[in-house]
Amino acid sequence: MTGWGLAALLSLHVLLCLFNGAYSGRTSSYVRGEFPSTDIPLESEWFATPNGYNSPQQVHITQGDYDGKAVIISWVTASEPAPSEVFYSKEENRYDQKAKGEMTNYTFYDYKSGYIHHCLVDGLEYNTKYYYKIGTGDSAREFWFQTPPAIDADASYTFGIIGDLGQTFNSLSTLQHYEKSGGQSVLFVGDLSYADRYEHNDGIRWDSWGRLVERSTAYQPWMWNSGNHEIEYRPDLGETSTFKPYLHRYRTPYLSSSSSSQMWYAVRRASAHIIVLSSYSPFVKYTPQWMWLKGELKRVDREKTPWLIVLMHAPMYNSNDAHYMEGESMRAAFERWFVKHKVDLVFAGHVHAYERSYRISNVKYNITSGTRYPVPDKSAPVYITVGDGGNQEGLASRFNDPQPDYSAYREASYGHSTLQLKNRTHAVYQWNRNDDGKHVPADNVVFHNQYWASNTRRRRLKKNHLRYESLEDLMSML
Image (cartoon, rainbow, N blue to C red):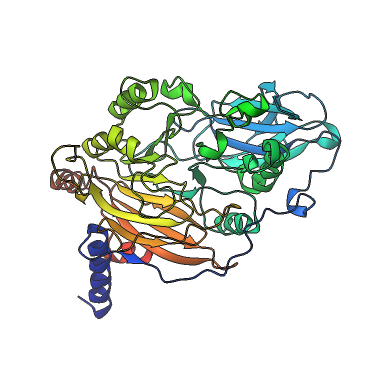
């Protein structure tokens, strides 16, 4: 073995030891000199409306079916109703295909929304760039998106993970860094605009947020999830329904996964099966969400989509003073299933800091007996909190001391994550600290797939002549 190869082997060994919990966790000593945690002024260029009367704005797309051959394209016309039509093609400026959607609007206390359009574009080809146009005449706008590769166990794909974004200059920094990351779609873990932080839950801040993130959301799918700031239950204002603005503005492909609600759903994309759960909808035994998740986990086919990823808002494991133990009830409801089905990763937000766990579980705990602390568990997921997008509430800087044994790395800084699925056996994960305008990778891990990690399946891979990544290839990922 060459000197370089030995060094690489040792480096990989250290990474895997950290991953498997052979070394204690770390609390970063980094102190961020952050931008002020105040929202960007409404008159800022970052919130500028597009040229043209009634021009489409706040454009965003999400996956529109179970397997990635459809998108839902959404936008707002502020002044008056307009056709809910999307013209699209595989060739720029041709637009020889058309899809028709639907239009809606809503009021919230003294705010009246613009006209919100949602259009399903289906029957798409995998791994293809599509151009699309919305609006008419001088007000028309043009964008593009790329469909994912076909569902396949070895399909490589890169996800961005963002949560608790808001609309501050820190939020803008997160967006700008993500745009340079190579991410192909975003897994969003809740808390979008923080409009509920304003008097009367000012809907204008929903509009400004939609224009801010359009720079990314118009060009690649964001898989939406809701957080506590989307609840917007205000009986004092006569608003007694929950999630009203969110449900009108952001659609999900819930019907394609046999869900009864937009709030929880599943999609398959490339080599991943992604399950989105709602922390603020009923989830205890026998409720619709509980029943749906029980069935969806049985539908997962790790031979086709080996990477099983769960999104939620309130973290099950959190060693920060902020929102401590708020995810405990969902942990009690679902953790045993996560271990049984060998979920790879669970992403959450809510806490405005970053934290990654080792593979641990607390499934043996009960009120009267059993192990009372999380213990290492090779069948358990890694839990990652990424509620550090940049919102106006600021960072959650008070971590519990001492750091729990289950916590591998934690830091109170703004940032985003990327997850590169390399093949059915390995993925490269990275958390990127914003660092006052600089892209700074702060946490890197090579994850081994839970399903294909067994010796029996590895032997089958070799027998079928499926090539493993070499050590050099693995190290070059970092």
